[in-house]
Length: 276
Image (tube, rainbow, N blue to C red; front, side, top):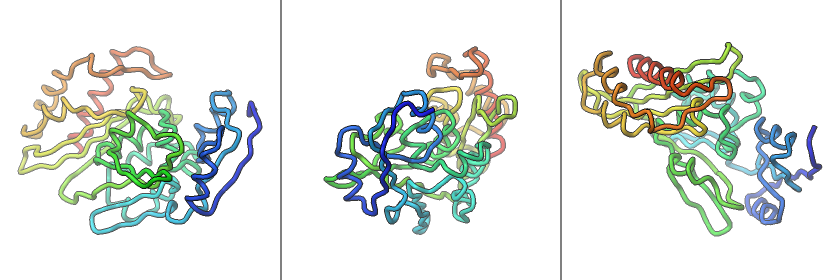
């Protein structure tokens, strides 16, 4: 049961949305399961929720050459149905890992960024591995920041997430591997990998973890260790062996043993690299 009543409004312009969000107690409504859960537990107590669904341009996926711009109101299911998204394997695999029908049909890119719950982990990890950037807007203008920085800082009061932008690298390969707790759609651990090779040597690689961490994170030290080495099971295992255990704070609501989570993460990274 929702703990406190609130009013709902869906403005037709971003200027009107800014005006509404400037009022105390107002926040963006994404229709996301995380928001609904927070209102039921009392962790979120807005007086007014502002939906962005009617604002032009936020519910579209636009491709400009190799640039893919995903509006913040685009649902996970709409992303899966998009042909351009279909050309990005790591993103498709991550979206398919999200099994909950409500999440697929009602959660959107903006909701994943606003709430950053573990259920959004697969999408966020995939976008991290793709070096995505976030377009934010406030009454004074627009700005773009890397998704990696956004996940650390979040959005400011009154800021609206407009879109996420990524570059389709047609010479790179990618994969998302995960462990699903009891096959019920709860990700215990996941790894997103995008890599480019010259011959059999890794020329560039990005690795992001989710599920076993509170917020998806890039593994920069591991990326440095794998860059310039030949793709082989032995080389990957050697790099993973050097991954410091204290680099990550590992936890999951279903599995509390950090050593086991660390083991799972390394297994999934190896699988993702070899599949890519």
